[in-house]
Amino acid sequence: MAGAAAPALAIGMWRNALGAMAISPFAVRSAPAELATLDRGGRRDIVLAGVMLAIHFGTWVSALKLTSVAAATAMVSMQLVFVVLIDRFRGTPIPRPVLIGAALSLTGVFVITGVDLTLSTEALTGDLLALAGGAAAAVYLDAGSRVRRQISTTSYTVVCYAICAIVLAVAALGAGVELVGFALSTWVAIVAVTISAQLLGHSILNHLLSVMTPGTISLILLLEVPGAALLAGLFLGQTPQPGVYLGLALILSGLAVVVLRRPPVEAPTT
Image (tube, rainbow, N blue to C red; front, side):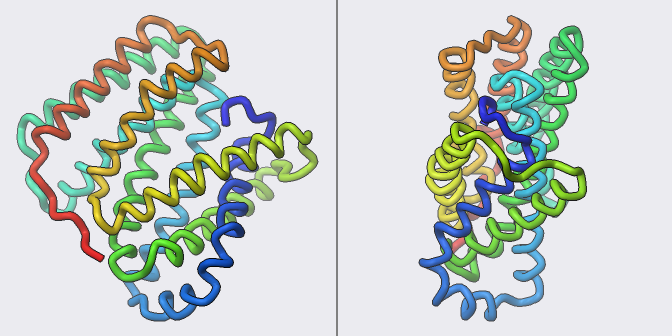
């Protein structure tokens, strides 16, 4: 996505719209009946999930165009800390080691933002957008985990992607962002990211929400951090400042403490 020559809102909108269109033939029969069974809370949560996914994509893709892939991926991985904070808001106690791990990760955030501030305000803006994307992703996973207890992966995914695409389209039109007229290479890149990251990435996460907690899924997503940094160096020629790698190490170390010392949470059931 960092290399696609299209506005961030357009990329996010099209990958969700194309994802919804690809899945819709498999949901056309089951989705209406399943959605009809949702209670008021379920309907609220599926809309919330779609809106939060739109905010996640709007901020995350924008971040990739402003700061390094390594920094943006490290920031968005902070969603695990936001998942812990959501649990705390619901009354779940947070052990002291988890607080220490969260503080260590936040230190890493400050290190990266401090380094990027010395480079440009644009890079700092990208860092903050990625951090906001991580917060939105945490709410998206939390709301989705509740909806997935009531409906299938296919029905949930097609509706969530459709809501996300609509929100991003409205935001793009309101901001005067072009949604068409791109070069063929850009459309190829959008289709490629739809197939790989959307259908084979987010859709799988939507399935896992029925058998795993948001925290466990956030842990799996941590594997993106070193991989994204390596790929960005190889294919995009991005070599972040040494301080960014220090911040990345602090974030991962803190998140590891959060994962290891966080009390077990019962996984959602189908």
